[in-house]
Image 1 (cartoon, helix red, strand yellow):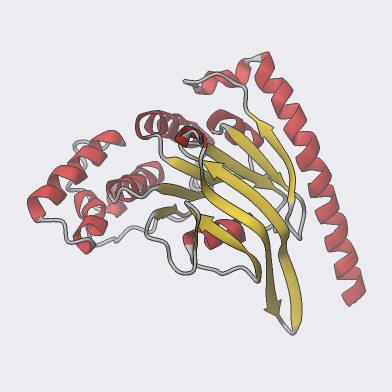
Image 2 (cartoon, helix red, strand yellow):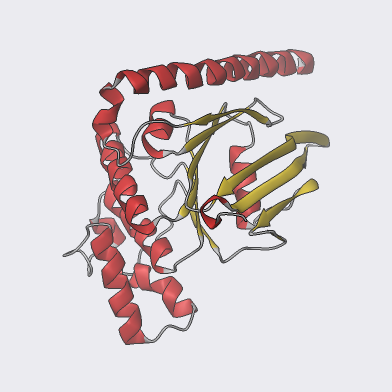
Length: 273
């Protein structure tokens, strides 16, 4: 009997993605397979251009594989998938709407009644610790606060999966750490299945249950590292010897692929001169 706690929610099955640009074919991903299980927090990490965003966009349904298949709970993803909530690097808020208006937007599109929208929005505004800012506009908020609004809006819509494409990349280092800790807390409460892209090994270790390292383009799974750091976690876990050991292990994989990416880029540039 399959334990639902370990069932696959997201699956990429031998996925290849080829783009055409300037008359040339670019293979972003080649024969890539991975899975994300129920309630897991998985981080994707790898060199720039290795296909991380391409993969997460396929799970969202924004792109289709050239070959292979992406699935949600066993069903092929063939179009934009409303069961997957996407959080981008940019805050993607409506500047003319208040915090509450932004958080309510997805609920309104679903036809949720006004009083219920208000109640649900306030619940998730509280979850991201923005009580008192319900009637503020995005321009009146810091970057970290705007990203909290984005997260509240996605969570209020109650997707089955969170897809997060470097959501903290635009934040300063201190705000980024605060947001990491907030996301840890929210994940503990919601247990949403989450696929998170990052370029930072430290961030992956703070957040993830598993870290998947992709090879330089064309992206494949190079390594899968189980994160043995205990939960619940806090930012100060970075000071532990186990954190340092895991960081060294992951960085060895990442460094190898970054160097390969740099060399490939140099050779490609030289061939075009």
